[in-house]
Length: 254
Image (cartoon, rainbow, N blue to C red; front, side):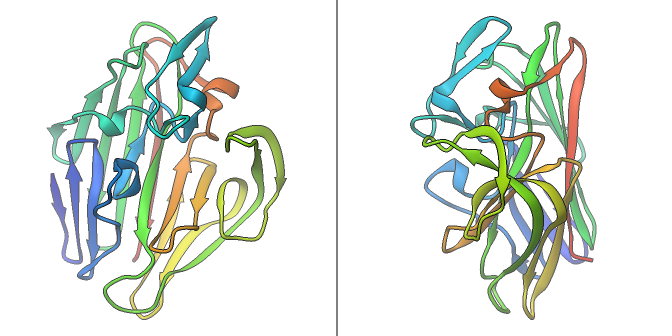
């Protein structure tokens, strides 16, 4: 699916519901290819975000197992490996089937203007309660086709402490020096990416958790999420039968 404006062009891949390209003023902002599907573009993380420890979900007295996609964990949900269908201009949808045991469906709506790109996602429950979490995983290039390397402005009060398996313990601790692979809360300045002499992009979302991964040499992953990794087990948002959970992410370069 293609979206265009005078200054920008976006491509959405129906295999995975992924924003596979975002070009602004002739410059590609995203990593557009990688060996693993979790390392490029901007893909939806749903019905969970981040690591699900050892592929196990415990909910309502039952334990459910999921394929190990990033050993030893199940990473970033199932919808980024699903086929989506276009239901209206700028809108796509996928059903939540096996191995997800609760059913449900997910929609995304994409809007592109000369100054901004916005995506909205909503997950709908069927006839039984289900735990849910969502977010996006964009990979931004450190270096665009012109200008200097990216500079990140971002401020938050705390991060989640993690255990030896990189799973949040639930304890909040002070923000360390970068580079980061952390889940941030108490955000006072949402991320701004500035490529000198090229472009500045402000990132916003209604979600209050941000995973920021600045360790790779070629890219930054800056991920708004509805909760911390493993919140599906630790502190799940439970959608009632027939209910939904929604969120949005915006990139503004106006």
